[in-house]
Image (cartoon, rainbow, N blue to C red):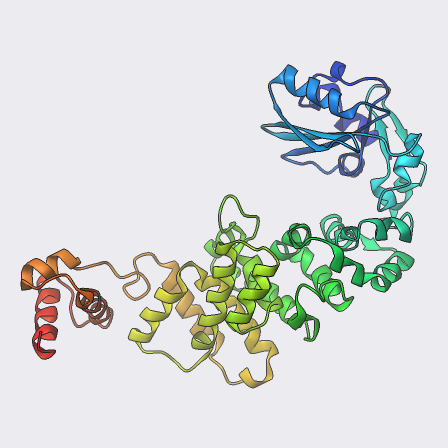
Length: 426
C-alpha cells in the first residue's frame, strides 16, 4: 500500500529545492498519511523531522526562496517556512532516534515517516495496517494526556477520513475527557470548525458532546439531546434540493478570514445557550470573532419570531431586515426545532418557511429586498423640514407602505411622508 506515497511525494511536488534538506530528512504526519490514502490537498501542509538543526535549515530554505520564516519554538527547534501554496514545518526530532520521535505522537496513522531522499517508509507502530482498516488507534494514553487537544483532534480526523476510533482508544478518550479543559479555547475552536462545516462531521460532533469532550465549552449542549445537530443537516439537505442556490450560500465562510460557514453557524447555535445574551458570553469565552458571535446571536433572536404565528407583510419586512444574511441559517434552525422540540409541534408547515426563504433568495422580491423610493435628502428638501430622527422613521414607514403595496412611486412616497408629518403635528 505504500506505493502511493512514492508517486504522490516527489522532489517536483515540493515547494522548495530538495537539495536544501540535509540527509536524512523525514516527512511525517498528515502529509504522509494522506499520500498513502491517495488524498490530495490544494494547500500543502508539510512536516519534516531532522536529527538536528531544524531552525537553521528552515531559515536557509526561506532565504533561498525568499519565503516567509516563522520561529515556532526555539527550545524545541521548530520553525516554519511559508510559501504562497504551502506551509513547511521543520523540527528537530524528539529523543535520540526517529523511532522515539514517532512513538511520542498521537495516533498510529500519524506516526509514519518517509525519508524524502531515499523514498524509504518507516512505520514502527504499524500505522499502515490501521490505515488499511480505517481506524484511529492511540499510541498510548500518556501521549493523549501530554496534549489533550489530541482527544478532540481524533474525532475531527475520524470525520475527515471517514474512519472509526478503535475501541480501547475511544474508552480512553472518554475517561480523560476532562483533560481538554486545560487546552486553550482557540485551539479547540480550530478542531471544531471542520465538524461544524461538514455533514460528515456532525456524528462526531454529537459523539464529542455525548462523551464529555465539550462540557467546558458548551455547558448547555452537554445537558441536552444533541439530535438537533443532525436535524440541521437533514433540513439543510432538504432545502437545498428545492433551492440549489442555497448550497453555495451555506458552504460560504462568513468572511475570507474565517473558517466558519453559514451551515456551521446553524450548528453552533444548537450548541450554545438559546438565550442570545448568554450565548454571546459563551462564544466570547471561546474567542469566536465578533462576526461569528453576531451571526449566532442574531439567529437566536430571530428564531422565535420565525417560528411564531403567521406574519403580515410588515412583520415579514422587519424580520428580513433584522435577520439580514443570517436568514437562511435561521430558517434551517426553525425547521430543525420544529422536528425536535416538543412544544413546537404546532408551528408553521414547511411550505411556509419555503415561501419565506424563496422571498429572501429572490433579489427582486419587494418584501425581502424592497428598492428605496426616496432618500432622507429628498424628504428634507421636498417637505422643507430639518434633519432629525424623524427622517429615519419616515423612511421606514415609507418602505413598509411600499411593501404593503400602498405606494410605488417617488411622488407617492413624498405625499405619504407629508401626511405623516401633518398627522403628527410636525
